[in-house]
Image (cartoon, rainbow, N blue to C red; front, side):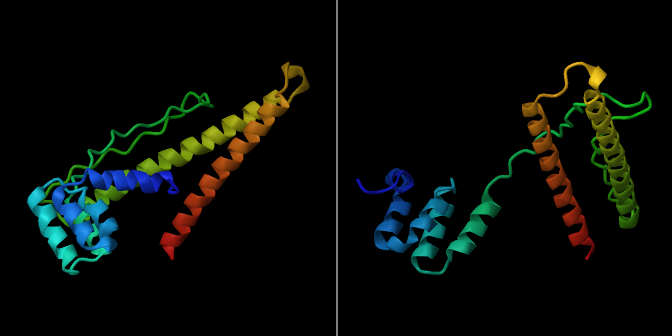
Length: 187
């Protein structure tokens, strides 16, 4: 039909849109993007009110997106999961990364005390994460050096070496990005 798949899918979505949205697009064809945003609102009265504002030219697309985003219920936060380390612990005293638990706030406690409690919990979590990362890097280096020894048996294949090198570059890029974020926030 001479149109790309996305265009056709969006037009089919408009065919199944509520009547007030179809009327908006029929009257003003420049409001198709508005219509897609309005379709996210489930309350018919609120949707009709916003559609009328769009029709009168009182509501820009950017403002409509902001309104829709504010009205949509926020998804429940995903449970915090700490991935297990792929490397064995280097020493018996080493501790795994521990996810920082939310600090319970007490409305009667002064703000500075609450901030101090949050900061100390964050410091502990950061210290644990940093120590665990350092230990994991040391363990990885030890394993790679051990594998490279001639008496170790079968050395890494070229494919495994290339994959490990690629993984290390990706990990390095992630660390570089984190360092850039820290530097940016300190400026």
